[in-house]
Image 1: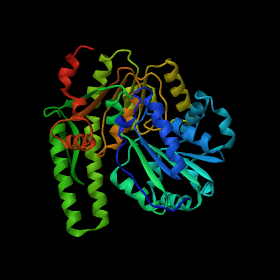
Image 2: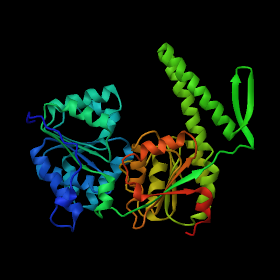
Image 3: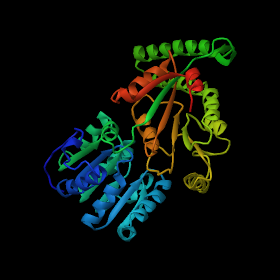
Image 4: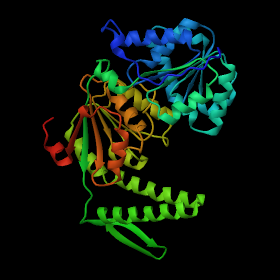
Length: 401
């Protein structure tokens, strides 16, 4: 690798392309050109811009042996289909696929495609492998839809002695310039019930009371603040774990209370082809009636469900953490997000699944006057607010399709 530290984090100005036609192809061709200058190139492109094809073109341009690292085995099949779709099957003779879980077997390769490269920062062990290939590999091409500031800084630090570039096409920009269709994004507010009592709340080891949703939420929030104060007073790590554990319970509760609302909405949307992202396997199974993809079903069952969805045999697919990355799901018209995380990643990943539709719709459910509003605010901090429509659940159900 050339030793000449450089770094860019600015978004690509798409107005600089003189030809407004075939913008996606021009972006991909620029990625190939950048790969000739920068041995380490991260394509931080919104889902649907064409990161995979850019990577295939880069492999074709430079030749040699390549290792494509993926997060899940399902993603390998998706890559094989990409090579086939673009008539580049012959390149597979010089490509090896491997999962990040077995990266220790693949640290001495010449060239890498790091699919969903943010996954390389998930653990201290993976960081060590990344440092190893930073010193050994001829070329490293990272693919991701979005990186946060800390992740960009991590890559900058690891590749500080390398000619290194981040080529960024964010979701807003891809929509603005017509690369991706302008979606209808609805933020659907629901309310906690304050009359029906059905949720147990443990006061202490000897006493449990039954609460309404609103009462449970208030009590749990007070408990979280108590545990948080205990941690910051003592700075004992086990107290931090106890605090975060209580916060996780609250987040799961907020997701669970939305199940009944999402179920009613699913009845309304009819036979539109959709994907629904849930908080838990239990919730996914409850809503899906057998069309759920998660870690507790076999790989063969997952592949069969994806195949049936893409062929149109089934119109709905439900998932928890899977299918957010590196999977081409055909013909999606509508997406539903039941529970956001406290970051931008989950929003951008799931929205990206939907934006290949001609007239995409995305519905994000949140509980008003709760921590959910904080999650929504954080997730949408840098997103174009003009694309968002806030709507109550009642108005959504009365709205014409």
